[in-house]
Length: 178
Image (cartoon, rainbow, N blue to C red):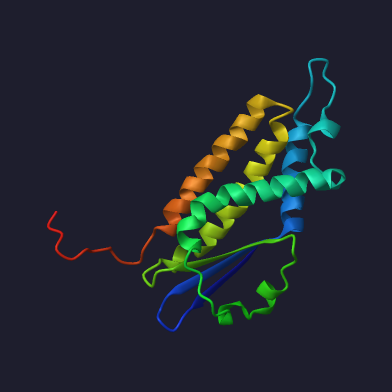
């Protein structure tokens, strides 16, 4: 994951998050391998080959990766609608080295955004991708285990939304007396 924080001239915070396709593929392969090691059928035979989502399923993984992007975009849409035209905040070499397979989101945040939660947002987005892809992969193999990953991804999406709404100071509205 690449996380870049940029402050604009008018004190807005631009949060850029990049999830690398290859890094996510490695994470999902590791997670599915850990699950596969512990999984056996009724006869006690290992289901390792059936449960591991490795490079042999790259087309399937790519479609799952894009599905996770679409699902998470629903939660981030309130922040992505106001992306500035100027790209001066994207001039870092790490962000510019993003491949076409990677997922990049630019989140213009208000000036009172609590920057301390930026890393947490990035890590939770990574975890969301991993759990959502695992849910898609397991939904045709083991519905019970798939449900666990779906619940985790839904919980992470809500936590991401809550973190994006954190402010460094209280929000006050003029003429509100309650």
